[in-house]
Length: 107
Image (tube, rainbow, N blue to C red; front, top):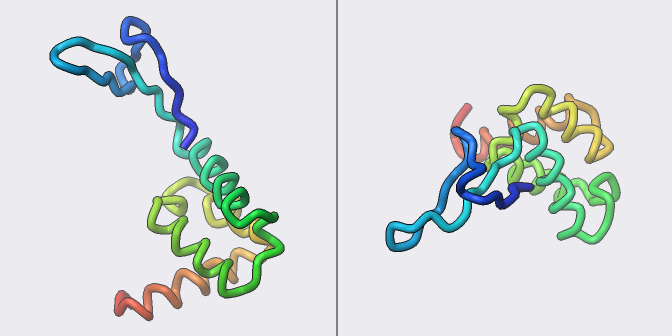
């Protein structure tokens, strides 16, 4: 997701401080959601071993499902960003999302 470790004394209000037996060991600074989407797309590209735009249709649908489960479409311009990475239109991404909803009975 692109988080980074910082010393507990440098932690900000939105950092997650991890403690063990009452002692603060490290703080984790999480990226903004928009940065997380880029990290998710890079991870999926690495997992598939090729640019996402080169995947077949079924695999692109599964990528959209994974991204939806991880909240990618709650980010502003999430659909547009994913569509560009997959080499498809926004309309196609919405179709993939709607098919998934229909298959799960969430219409």
